[in-house]
Figure 1 (tube, helix red, strand yellow):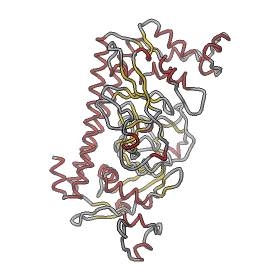
Figure 2: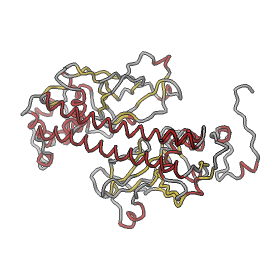
Figure 3: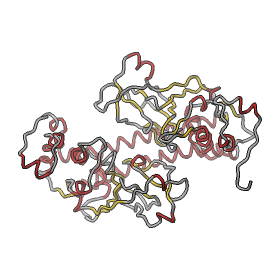
Figure 4: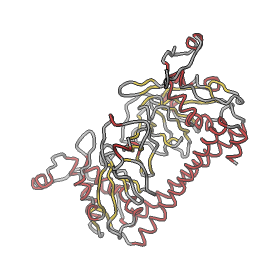
Length: 459
């Protein structure tokens, strides 16, 4: 019996479960509780819970922006979403998001299921949410920020995961089971301190986005890029030799907007990306190598231009200890799936990236790392990626094509101005994330110690 997890339960406890859970892991993995705190089921403190809308989505900006399961990071709903839903007025009235709604991800991979975020109405754009998500609206006894922090802390996450039902391709959590999760009803003053962390973090995130946009504007104004003029013409005439030289027969590759982009860039000094950086790639170990402990494994889904999201996938240090790691000032660039995402690594990291993420090391000191990263994330390189990686359902950007990407070489003064903006933007994001982690740690401290220790941490 050594090494086995054993827990004795009364029959009535099993029968009282809404889903009649009889799987042993559900009972052997009950989360830790503080006997000095008062606990209650989440469902008892909810005004409502609601599935999102199931509808076809589009990338043509038709309808209302719609949140999906991969657009929640660091306990906040992303500021921007990729798709829209063309819905009726009645559907809009029912599914429109409101300030401080809590969105819970009920289905996805085991890694993503249960991810929870607060939606803040930071502008006048109205948005909705997809059926993968569940909207939770708590009563006054539980502030939305506290509910979100609890479901993301290690104890709330543990309780969600033990209720998850895994199948071959995805994992599901029944929202009715989420309502059965017991949450400590913390003092309102402590909850308000947690709320302050969230709201301040959100404000810093919005400011970070504004400053990053200012850096992009400097680039666009310097190059005098006019996207509306580039896309006004939709027909192009090409010689047969053009097809022969590049081997592409799809019409999308020859859209006039690409000619307009290259015509504009030709007025400036430029270089091929392959002449600026050394390009290397990591490995693609296959899902059979995934494990729960070891070296964190980062995939494209974990990568954004602002950094990494947490991953629960790891690789064995014994088998993959010699694989390249991201070094300080290395630029990570996605080449498969969501192509063209670039992130400059701030410091050496003990993670392994998938083979779909390239490691770019700058070899030309005439290009500053932050400037080059911003250009890679800009519409200038985005259009080149769109052209090269198009023509198939799953985008694939060949390294040979990436080497030929055209990069404008601006003056050191302009590069420095852009770099300063980027660094300021990233500093604000780091502070935002620190405040959110502080809020989550405070919840864990209240459970592990007491509420006074949690309040002291926040003060």
